[in-house]
Amino acid sequence: MESDNMPEQVQNILNKITEWWKKFNTKQKALLISIVAVIIVALAILAAVVSKPNMVTLHECQTTTEAGTVKDLLDGESISYQMSQDGLIFYVDAKDEAAASILLGKNDIPSQGASIDNVFDGGFSSTEADKTKKYKVYLQKYFAEQLETLSNVESASVTLDIPNDDGTILAKDQDSYAAVILTLNGDMDEDQAAGLAKYIATQLGNKNTDNIQILDSNSNVLFSGDSSDTNVGTANSQLSVKSKAENLVKSKVKDVMVGSSLFDHVEVAPELVMDFDTSEEATHEYYAPDGQTNGMVGSKSEYESESEGGAAATPGTDSNDDTSYVIEDNNYTHSTVTDTTTNYQNNEKVTKKSSNGGTVNYADSSVSLVATKYRIYDEDTLRASGALDNMTFDEYVAANSDPTPITVDQEYITMISNATGIPTDKITIIAQEEPVFQYSSGGRSASDYLQIVLVVLILLLLGYVVFRSTRKEKVAEIEPELSVESLLESTKESQEEMQDIGYNEKSETRILIEKFVEDNPEAAASLLRNWLNEEWE
Image (cartoon, rainbow, N blue to C red):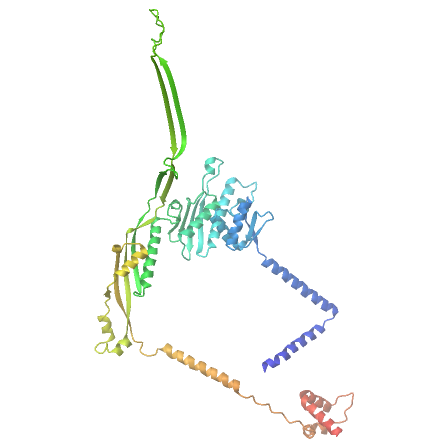
């Protein structure tokens, strides 16, 4: 019925609005329309200004290659940005500035934020030392604000030590120092801490992260610059690397033991032997080219000499005592010398193997585990089976509360060895069956009865709604029409006092009749119809 009255209510509201609007003249209507139009335009402008992003300068690239790298990084992280006409200056929304700056810092690209031009304008009263101090304070606040935008960082405190630039080459090559203390509301792994250190070092202009130190509020070292350049990746220490390797072994053992459905709980304690020494091995192999017994000729030299002569006298300036004659007696010498030197270039294969450390020696490692299988003892089940005929359940618990050892098959040890690489003789398993006792609930609890009551109430309410919806509506009784006699009888007293009623003046009787018509319009209409019908007949 209410839905049928809705159009009438809407029509009444529209009629009231129309009547209110008709009260104004043309000038007033034009003024109202102008005011409403101005308000709408003002709201539209305000909405456009409020919704417009506040774009700030992120980075000014020096080359188009660098601009392409920045564009790919921002697109990869779905960070909206705008570029200048030459494509070298990138602008981002102010709310995305922190995430974009950290992203560029991780990739060795300093953002525009770490620029002294964005901190203050130099004046005649500002010395170079004042500017350096202000810039240091700005950077400390800037880094703290950027770090606090991370989801797992609640607050951050940054302390910087920036060397004084006195114009010398030595001062120019010095790196800044940064000490960061983070209050975390979650976990932070070594990779994330190393990324933050890389970001800070890049923003400071450092060549590496050696001078960056990151701690949490509990004095735990998250990143230490002096150990960041080790050969074990981003881990801060050898202990961290060993812990990661042991966690991997634990995960594999639990997967195969619990996944077999034989045990419900497994505790694993691995002891891994790790080698953190770095080594490099080079192997040189020489061989001749295919189809040859020697290598390729690298160089070749040949020497050949031939000489011929007879008997010789004493060299020098000695005089000849006797007259001599040259008589050919075929007494002479002849020699030939030939020398060939050839250098061969054999093929050479050089193989280098280097170990960065942190390798696991599984042959000398070991693992121990305790496997537990739970066995449930239910009081109601035991009582039904007759196990509690001669004792109480508490006595049964006291008599059977000790764990029972379980013999582990060799195939489980072999399975663990294949999963971890640890030899079978270095694997120790202690398996046991642990009882779990469940006391009787003693029938239904109060919560069970409450649920039943709620279900009954819901069903009763649903039945009442269905019953109400199927009832027939009562037909409204139609009031009988008033006859002329009853109307005249009800106004008999008024008729006795009624005098001549003038057309232009209102007597008391006329006032009573008008009041009756206003109060009973339907009765008056019915009376008028009856009069007309009687006159017509």
